[in-house]
Amino acid sequence: MFDWYKNKTTKSSVSEPIDRSAQVRVIGDRASGKTAYMASLAYWPNANSSSPVQTVTPLNDDTNELVENAQNILEQGLQLGQTDLKVSVEDVQDYSLSIVLKGQFSWKEPKVTLQPQLVKLNINCRDYSGEFFSDLLHKTGDSQLTNYLEDCLLANGIMFLADGTSHRKDSEYANGLDKFLIALDRTDISKIQRRIAFVMTKCEQSELWVNRHKPRELAQARFPQTFRKLQAWQQTGGGQVDYFTTSAFGVLGSKYPEPNSVRIKRDRGGTSSCIKDPKRWRPFGLVAPIYWLCTGERHKELDKD
Image (cartoon, rainbow, N blue to C red; front, side, top):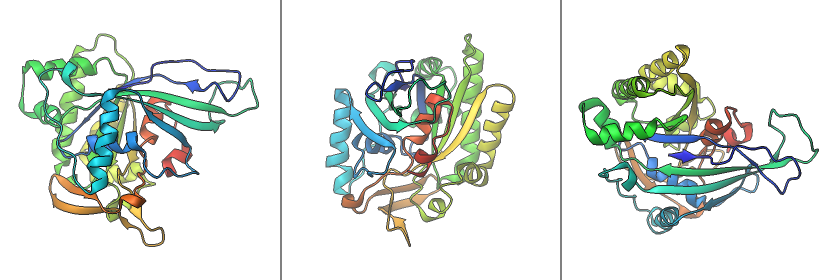
């Protein structure tokens, strides 16, 4: 779950950030990289001085533990353990972050100051296990699954993470997404206009990295059935959809970039890997989908970051 708590525009100075609010849930298959995504976002290693992201700050104990995991596990070239399927929604770890973006003039509201204003995103994220997604395909009438779906009803944004190299599971993703959206539509009396961000992870892999700046085209080529489901949902008035590429580890080099990761295994479920050179660990694209889910706008600089 992502929560942007406040919904106001500050009009006085750069020292008073603009806050945006939304509630978002993250879903994805077991190996989609949800926890690695959050750990890299919370840790924010080797920050680029030219990045539009000014700071990423952990706000609670669960998130501080996640940062420690990034330091003690990921940075040592090890893998994070899989997230356990919890008994109830309340038992799922709840990560809380504050992301501050540097001053910029991209907002649509009339300007009342010539100074660029900071943008602040306060985020809460519940890290659901991949079993939640697979249960959508194989279980019906399960009370825990029902509780998770009811929790998702509170969201006006969904982040659907998919390992970009798991394209052979496209039909499963499309079927799971279809059941998820049908379940939401059947039980949602508020009829919230939602946004869905389809986020392809592990894009440090060479075949993905070369197309990282064309996320829509990449999604359509690698996940055609899932892409069609999302487009149909949007065309029938379900909400908005957009596409993103991310990498928790990034790449090494600029002229001839190579993944900053060591592959442990690769199968139809995707790629498992660990970081190769922690000293040059720099994630790619982690904040861009959050910004869009919060504002409904693309941030050109975040799309490059």
